[in-house]
Image (cartoon, rainbow, N blue to C red; front, side, top):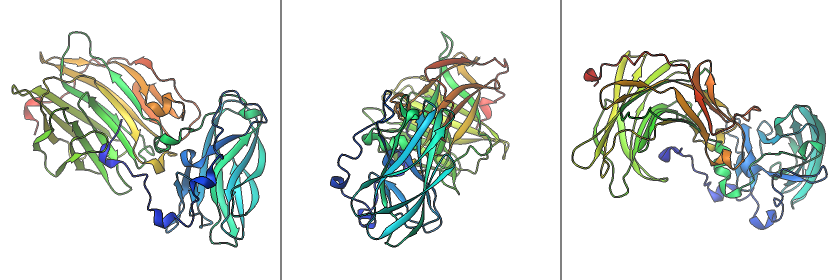
Length: 436
């Protein structure tokens, strides 16, 4: 799923990078061989940094960046750029790279799964360099790090791609190979849990809980608890210093969603970019390791629209906190299409793993009865289904549902799989009449 206004733009200021990034003509023909299931040991697979690399160590003031051309502004010897590719076989992995140097000579260090190699780069046109070979003992993601050692020119190099071959690349190699979607590939696969109420139950209320384990709350994470056909509600990590509770409702095809009321300190605005709608958020420093409770209500307003409201229970205050009520016109419905999701909305942090436990899902039907949701279907977005990445997982963990993505972990879980947890049989203890 998408978080609209929280996307970090992939557009960079051209003037700032012009001295370090080549033209399209310079790169022509260099990335024509994509990931394949049936390469021979002598075939070369070209892994574009534009879709598969991150600056994983960026010192204060350093300028290194990944663009549509690859690694640019490589000037700081303490910066580290990491490239990730998944291998489905063990065996020999031969590693090379394609790069150019603006002037002089650059010495660099290339580390492949912990094995270090040194290389000397020179020349103002793109050239391919053989780096070295390693033995791959297990399947999964391989990390290739680039770091500068010393240089005589203005910066180390422009690097467009990593070149791999060998017996470890003869089958089931996975890396991002769709240039039109490199932005999404670098964000990583979004993963979801879909819930279907038992037959005969119309959901007026939706209740669920989320707990994010310590260390899994990376910048760019959106842990969405209560999703429905017209909107979504959850918690985000927007930066190293700001976290939010976010509740949004899409516009109807023929009319805009409007704010009815909002809670204390809640910010409301409209969003655009990928669809439009009404957005409300509370800046709140929620904590990993703490369980938060989410409650969403939907009811037709008898005038052709539907009002959607959401609350979050924060243990820090021991209260239910009201976020907002949004009115969606030309919509007469209760809560349908129930789901939760986990996504990363920051393409620079897609190498960092994130995970959350999704717990205790219930609906309260229009007859006033609480009904437990114990079955969920684990699904994933196009980044996963087009096999651009395989660091996704979901299902059951110690009796509760979970979602996990990013971080280039080895053991993924097949999407489009159903899971059933053990029912607790204890409805939520919520006094709906006393909600703010």
